[in-house]
Amino acid sequence: MPLALRVVQSLSEAAGILAADSRTTLLSGGTLVMRDVNEGRLTEGTLLRVTDPVWRQIQVSGSRIELGAGATMAAILANRELGFLHAAARAVGGPAIRNMATIGGNLFAGAPYGDFAVALLALDAQVMVLAGYGSPRAVPIEEFLAGRSRGEARLVASVQFNRPVAPGDFRFIKVSRVKPKGLSVLSIATHLPGHASRIGQARVAYGAMGPVPIRARGVERALEGKALDAAGGAAARAAALEGIQPVTDAIASDWYRREVLPVHLGRLLANQS
Amino acid sequence: MAKVPVQFRLNGSDRAAFADPADSLLTVLRRGLNDFGPKYGCGQGTCGTCSVLIDGELRLACLTLAASCEGASVETVSGMADGPNLHPLQNAFMEHFAAQCGFCTPGMLTAAKALLDRNPDPSREDVIDAIAGNICRCTGYEPIIQAILAAARTLPAQRRS
Image (cartoon, chains in turn cyan, purple):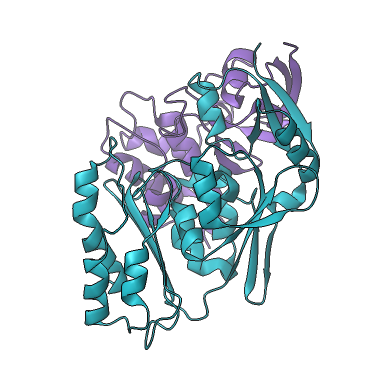
């Protein structure tokens, strides 16, 4: 039985269908699902398209930001109020991919993809999940990513987070061998409020250091309460490898990723990347 | 499995085809509508040789569900020339030896057109970023970059101002 296609207008209807039929796959920008179709990994079941315009909305009101899961990387780049996220959005593919790839899809992209999710993890985003008919439920992104690695299927309506208070509180780097577009050797996002004097609620996230983006809790502890000076940077680098399980793939071995991670973390914290 | 009808404007002409529900736009263009300009390269969104413009936006036809193009305007490399008159980008690619095996050329031209349509006076860095999603294994990219910059210089002055 080849693939069928179903198109629905509302997110809640889509969530209900996904909850009722495990053989239904949500199609967002197509950069992940259509690749599986082309390569013969997805040959049966139903593709589900959602045309609800709410899914693609970006709302910036004061300090709170909500990105519809169907919003594309290009839409992020076109929004001046989201300038702090532009480096992370630009890290995703080339121009054509950025016109297609969505925020929601990036949350499901396996390593070494999913660089934008690393940024969202450092921002402590809340993932608004629809698990059937009803209202979206807020799930902390770290919990959401852990659930993803267990294969849980849910519809993401949007992601919400607070804008970093000061310029420079949020930083992002993607390291790749080919520039300007290449797969991640690793990516790092840091959100360090008060970095000029005393860091509070440090958040540091890694990509390609596990099957899903992970928090660097050792680095966060090392930076908590400190200034982002030479001593703070040294403490962060010393804790850089805690809790990581780097992937080995065609881009880099796990050994290489371990070797270069502290170097790039140090450069990012020193603002030299 | 029942076919689904798909209708869109292709290079300025209304076209229709029947497609399998999961067919990509590239499949419909090549098999259904005999537009062999966009190439099937990797099928993964890596090589860029299937690049097309959908409603003026650069996209990859191999990763675009054909059914999602209903009512859209699709432009491919096949529609770039105006009858016997090549597009300035096509002339520049010839003059600067920007095509060798030619497999990447449809995608390169389309990505370059997307750039010049929105930025008629690009910098070298703009050009490099614009073709970052297109792989060429022959030229080393430099002739392509030079061709796109040269084509931009031939555009009417009012488009560049």
